[in-house]
Structures are given as C-alpha cells and as structure tokens.
Image 1 (spheres, rainbow, N blue to C red):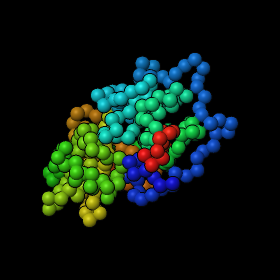
Image 2: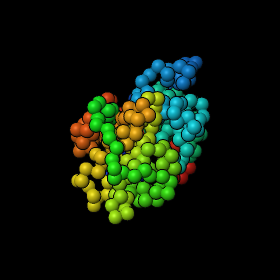
Image 3: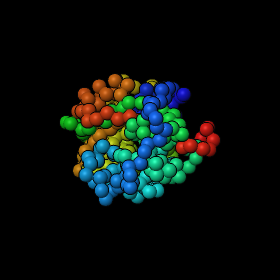
Image 4: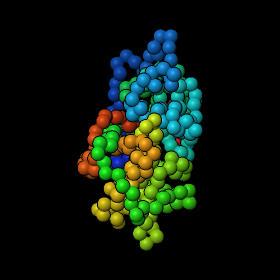
Length: 277
C-alpha cells in the first residue's frame, strides 16, 4: 500500500513505502475504554507531561489554540493548514468516535502513537518509525541570503515540496510562520520553517532543497537561521524525521541536535466514505 503524500514525515526518503503488516491485538478489535472515565484533558494529565511527549496536543492546547478545532478530547488543525490530529494519550472508544466525527468519513489524517491501539475498522494507510531530536548545542545564526517567505510565495513553496517531499505542506501551512527561503536566479531552491509549537518549544519543519542545488549546505544554513528566530523569542528548537533516514539524522546530530525519543508516525483513514479520499 503506497504511503499517503501528505503523511510523509519530515526528512523521510521520497517515494512509495508500504504500510507494513498491521500489529495484531489478540482478542480485541478496538481499544477498551477505562471504566467510568474519558481520556484526560488539559485540566488533568496533559499539563503534567512534558510538552514533547504529545507535541501536537500540547501545541493545540497552548500557543496554537487559535488553530484548534475540537470535539470532545480530540483536536485538529484546519484541513488546509495541517493533516495532524491530536489525541489524548489513552484513547478510548469515545475518542475514536470523536476523531471520526471531527475529520469525516474517508478522510486520511496524520497522528503519532501505537498502531495496536487503533480500532480494527480503521484503515492504517501508513505507519513507520520516526525520531524526535532536540537542540543540544545547535549553532543558531541568521543567514544573509535567507529571505522571509509569505503567502505570495506559497505556489513556489508547494512546487518545491512536490519535488523534495519533506513532509506535509498545504496552502495555509505558511501560517505556522518562520519560513525562510534561499533563491538562486529568482527561483526558490531551498526552504525551512516552523510547525508545531508546544509551550517553550518550536518544531523546525519542511526542510528541503531542490535536487539541482543539493550538496551546497543550504539546508544547514536554513536550519540554523530558523533556529535563530526560535531562540530569539525564547523557545527551544526540535524536529522529527524518519528513523530510516540515517543521512538526515547524522546531519542534524552534527549540527547539535540529540535524540530525545522514538515515535511512530501513523496515517489513518476514517471509516466510511470513498476509499480514494
């Protein structure tokens, strides 16, 4: 089964990738709810956890609350901003019903978590191991050649992403802010920007370079420049990439990032609707 183009994690190799066998959960087709309770929300367990343990949720309950669309304990970004869903740490049957209602039948969404907790009637269209890396001595500095990108640059950004495939980038993703680019001969050849903003942290995302300009250190320069803007407002940079992308991981570690945790990227299709959605 091919990997959904909007669900490719940042830094993942381009091209199709199978979803792989779905983990079996003997004797269970859906997660069992905890008796008499719902997943804990912002007023309970969420506030006691590290923001990077569930960064999309921490962002949508915090600095990105203005983006948040919510049903029950499930949150999401607007469909043209990001495909990410934010579930509580212990989803139950009501969580999955709320998630389905929030996204709609046949919609493909992105999340992180344990695939074995996904109910049997949901389709897992992609799952793969990833890593979360955090700033641990990154040399952050502005770049004289980097220019700030805005809404007028979105068509060029979408074209660059279509070829480089750094991860999800949609017409309103630019609203996350902090996007910088490098142009050569008037053409946008490299870019990087910001995505999730859990309290005190900002994710560096959409790091990509046109194939014709790779090997010139443009991605390194842009990561440092985006990080400089993040640090300037008092946040700490972090990022995600595919665990299979050893080249990207080596680069980020050489720049001063360190591994914080492993994650599993999930692409899920809401039951019902058209399978081609």
